[in-house]
Amino acid sequence: MTARSPAKRVHIKSYGCQMNVYDSERMADVLRPLGYGLTDDPEGADLVVLNTCHIREKATEKVYSELGRIKAMKLRKAESGGEMLIAVAGCVAQAEGAEIIRRQSAVDLVVGPQSYHRLPELIARAHRANGETLAADFEAQAKFDALPVDRGDTGVTAFLTIQEGCDKFCTFCVVPYTRGAEYSRPSGDIEREARVLAERGVREITLLGQNVNAFANDEGGGLAALIRRLARIPGLARIRYTTSHPRDMDDDLIAAHGEVEALMPYLHLPVQSGSDRVLKAMNRSHTTDDYLKTIERVRAARPDIALSGDFIVGFPGETDADFEATMSLVRDVGHASAFSFKYSRRPGTPASAMAGQVAEEVKIERLARLQALLEAQQRAFNADTVGRTVPVLFEKPGRHAGQVVGRSPYLQAVHCPGGLDLIGKIAPVTIKSSAHMSLGGERAMEIA
Ligand code: 5AD
Ligand code: SF4
Image (cartoon, rainbow, N blue to C red; front, side, top):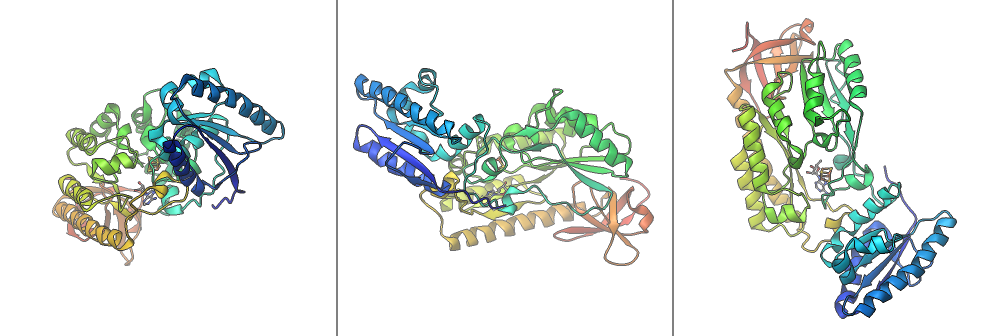
C-alpha cells in the first residue's frame, strides 16, 4: 500500500567547524527520501537536528540552552496535536551519548558522526518509542515487504503467521519502516489455531514471520519450544518456518532440527551477500563466517537439511571482488533452492542514499551469473534425490489425469501417478526423474 504523507520539515542547525556544515548537508541528503524538506525555522518543524560542536565546554553548554528553547517549541507543537522529534548529532552526541537524554529528556535521539546514514532507522525507532508508526513516504513493494503468498488453499498445507515486523534495519529494506516493530503472537493462540487447522485436515503448517526465528515466545523457549509444542498436535505431520535471520538461529532451534520428526529438513536462511564489507554496509549484524558456522551446526544436527536463501546483487559499493565472494560462498554452501534479486533502491532506506550505486547493466550481468549457479545447484540437489524413496505429502491433482502432486520433505514438488484418495496422505515415493523445479516418481512400498 502506498501511503503518501504530507511533506515534513526538518531544521538542521550546525555549530562549529566546516566539517559539521558538510555533515549537515549529508543529513539533509539521507532525510530527503523520507519526505523531509529543510526549513530555517525550528518552530513547528517535524524534526530538529542540532549538529553540535564539542571543542569547548562553552560550546556544549550552548547546546543545552538551545535544547531548552527547542523543548518549549516541542511542547507547543504537542499542544496542537503535532509531534516534533529532537535529534542531537555531531561531536557532543559522540562525546556524551545517552547522557544528553538524561540531562534533557525532550531529546528523542542522539546520533554520532559515524551514524548519519542510520538517521532513517533512528527516526523510525524514535517514532516507535513514542507509540507512533512512521508515516514516511514508502511505497511498500509487495515483493520485499509482503510475506510469502499462500500456495493456494489445498486444505492439506496452511500458513500460520506467528510473528510480524522487524527490528533489524538492514539498510536496503523497507520492512522495519512499513511493518513496524517485531511482534510475536501468544503461543496459546498459535496452538489453538494450529489445532483447528489440523482438525480440518491440514497436515503441514508453515509458521510465518518476517523474522520468524526472532519469535518471542511468551511462554519461554523461543521458536524451538513452539515447534516442539505444535509437533504434538494429532494429525499435524509436518512443520516448516520462514523467513529466518542468521543471527537468530539459536542452539535450541538448531537442536530441534535433529530431534523433532515433524520439523522438515529445509531451512530458508538468507545471507544476502558473501562479502563481509557488503554485509556490514547492509547492517546485517553477521559475517559470512558467522553464517557458515551456523550452517555447519545445522548440518551437524540434520545432515540432509536442504538449504535455501536470499541474495542481493549490486548493493551500493559492491565491487567485482565482493560479487565474486558471493559466488564463492554460494559454491561452498550448495543450495536446494534460492531467491536472488538485483538491489533495488527503496526511497527512505539508508542504502538508497549511499554513494556507489551500481549500474543496471552490471546488476543484470551479476544476477544472471548468480542465478545460473543457483539453478545448477538446484538441479544437482534434485538429481541427487533420483533413486531415493522419500515420503511425499500429496496436496492436489496433477496436470494430467491419474496424477497427483505433493512435496518431499525438502519442499520439492513431486509428480506421481495415483488417485485423488492420496491427497492429504503421506506416502513413500521412489524418485525416477528430476528437473529444475520438480521431481517425478512412483509409489513405493516403504521408505528406503
Ligand atoms: N533490493 C533487492 N532485494 C531486496 N530484498 C529486500 N529489500 C530489497 C531491496 N531493496 C530482498 C532480500 C530479502 C528478500 C525478502 O527480499 O533478499 O531477504
Ligand atoms: Fe528486511 Fe529481513 Fe533485514 Fe528485517 S531482517 S530489515 S525484514 S531483510
